[in-house]
Length: 399
Image (cartoon, rainbow, N blue to C red):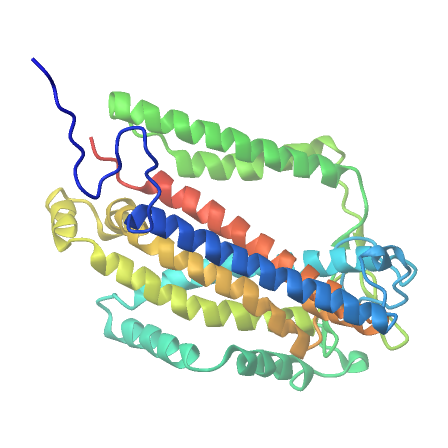
């Protein structure tokens, strides 16, 4: 019997080419290739045009300026720095100052925002109204104005250095900031830091063991109190083993300022308080909406089992609310980090402030701006990656 091979009209014959712009898939790929090509061409034009203009004006390009001497001072730095150091080290100081404000601000804003968000749902009328007033007022005031308020509160509301307040021996409060005694340099502090890290690792391992043990036997292990004991006990043991030094570096007035000890500058206080208070108002609403999203039946079931209100919120409601809270909470963390650039307005030496001084001295604005953009992009992506990992970790897994 003879067989006949037929080809449907409009469809490619077997072994023939399947490329056709009438195919939606092929057309989509072609359009994407054209868009990418157009973006590359525009980018190439902008870069080549910029380099050509810089060359005509004899303006140097590249990042070799980072190795030159900075020749400007920085009031606050977490690492050793002097005007004789390079621009690269000055930029690193700015990055660390930005990270310091961002990390401390995120922690404080999370704590305050959680407390205020829970307080808004309180059955106590006064507490709920005070929390609501805080959220509505703070959210509607621009953060820059809040920074000015906190900075003016310190710079105008406190006495000058020579008339500094001395509430406790060795502690001084003035327009220059809060000066407190600091422990003198000693190897024991490094030992205590190592002991604290070990305590954190042990607490993490213990928490996983306790969770597996509870799922297997139903017995609850006091993880919270044990973790607290580890975090305090191990560093304390290291402190005693290292000789328990008590020497303090007490601030003393010399000339027009205090020397020695540890200082919290007005600029750092203003940027920290402004960002923390402002972001906490938004976090409070995120927490409140997350708690409301949990079915009321969960609370009723906990009450039926005789679980008190505190453990019900901590063990039943909040763990479920986290699945709603974490995504928008990530955005607030990113906003706080990016808003730290407002520190330039009150003189805090953050990343933007130091980079601005650098590009003004070197004239290499393009390199300075790209460094700022790259740093903030790296920080933001790191926060997003961590929060996305945490969000997947607490997500409900269907069985």
